Amino acid sequence: MENISSEEVCFIILKAREINAKTEPEFPDHTSNAADDQGREILLDYPDDATNEELTASLERLNEGELTELLALVTLGRGDFTREEWPEAIRQARDFMDEGTLRYLLDLPLLADYLEEGLSQMGFSCGEAWEQRL
Image 1 (tube, one colour):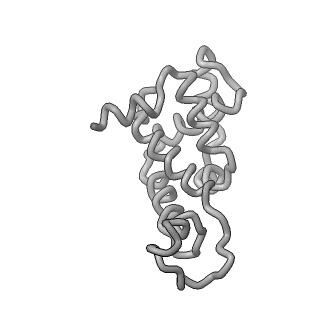
Image 2: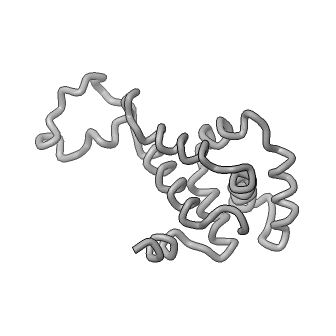
């Protein structure tokens, strides 16, 4: 990967996993006491939750080269291409990109899984990426 770092991909994976873990609140108001609910409220998907905004912002910050490689990683992780076919995955991702690309990624239910598998095929892991940050 020439444009996007594995650390950036891992951050996107982390945020996508956080979003996937959220559930609809049973009661839409914030009357819960954090000390009483043992932190369960963090898994509830309230409209003002910042997790989705963080994922959206991280995707919006990507330049064209980074976004192209992120899309290519998704296709690798989905099984459309192999590591040896990386140049073709890049070409397809470049052709696919348009104004709806961010929405496509945000709406992709298995985004974190696809990216993690794509990273693995490219010889990277989020464990290694987080260790490098420490």
